[in-house]
Image (cartoon, one colour):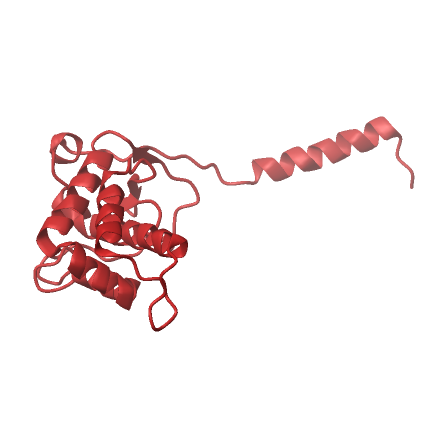
Length: 188
C-alpha cells in the first residue's frame, strides 16, 4: 500500500511527536544552601571530606605535571623535584582559582563536585552551584594542609601514590574522612 506523501508525513510526524510525549519530564533545582553554606568563611563540616579529596587530587595533578617537565629522574626512573620546585608547585596549587568545583545535591545530600571527585550514580539532570565562597574555602583548606603537614611530608606521600597522599591529608583519626569525623562517604 502506497500512501500519498502528505499523509505519510502526517503519520510520521504523529509517531515522532508521540514518542516525545512518552518521555519522562525532567527538572532540576539548585541546592538550597543554609546560612553556614552561604556565608561562613570556612568549609562546612559535612563537605570537608570532599574538599580534602579535591585538594589531594589537585596537589597530585600539579606535582605530576611538574615532574613531567623535570629532567632529573630518580633511581626508579621517575622525575624527582627539588624542594624549591615542589614547594612552589604546592603553593601555586593552593593559590589556583578552584572555579571548577561547586556544590550539587544528590539524593537530598549536598556534595562538593569537580575534578577528582567520584561521580558514581548521578541523577540524569542536576544543578551545580560554583563560585561564591567555594573557591576561597578550597584554597584555605589547601593552605591549611600545607601548614599542618608541610611540603616535604606531602611530597613524600605523593611519591608513594595518590592513595597515600589522600590518606595523609584526609585519613587518620582526626582526618576529614575518618570515622571519628562522620561525613557521609557515599559516592556521587
